[in-house]
Length: 199
Image (cartoon, rainbow, N blue to C red; front, side, top):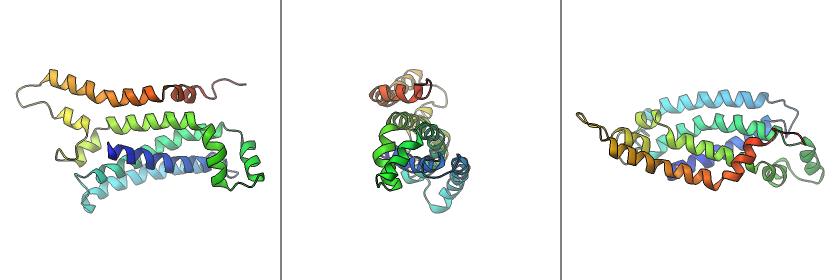
C-alpha cells in the first residue's frame, strides 16, 4: 500500500502543476504545453522501464513506483487539463491583482475549485495502479514486492486451478477500490458532471 500512496502523491503533485500551466491559467498558452508534457511523460515511462534492470531496481517497490508514476502522469495531466480549463481565468487574474504569486493563486483559489476533479483523478489513478498487471509481473520475482493482481494470477497450479481461492482473493482485492470510491463518491460525481451543463 505504501508504494501506491507514493505513486498517487507524486502523480497528483506533478500532474496538477503541469496541467495548471498547460491549461493556460498561468500564461497565454492554449494547451500545447499539456500535449507536449503528455508525450514526454510516456517516453520517460519507457525509459524508466528499460532502466530498472540496469539500476538494480528490479524486484523492489521503488522499481514499481517509478514506472507507475510515469505511466499514470499522462492520465492525470489529460484529466486535470479539462478541469483547470473550465475554471474562469478571471479568478486567476483577480488573485494576481490581489498580490498572490502564481503558486499562491493555484493553492488558494484554483485548487479549492478543482477538488472534485482532483478526487476523481485520484480514484482513477489509484484504480489504475492497483489493477496494473504487466509491469508488476515483469519487474517483480519474489513475494516481497509482488502486487495483488500478480499474486492472484500465480494461484493457478500446473494441474489444477483453485477457482474458489482465486474468486475469494479477487473479492478481497476489490474492497480497497470500493472503499476509496465510496469515500469520494460525491466528489467523483461532481467531477464527472462538471462542465456538462451551463449556468
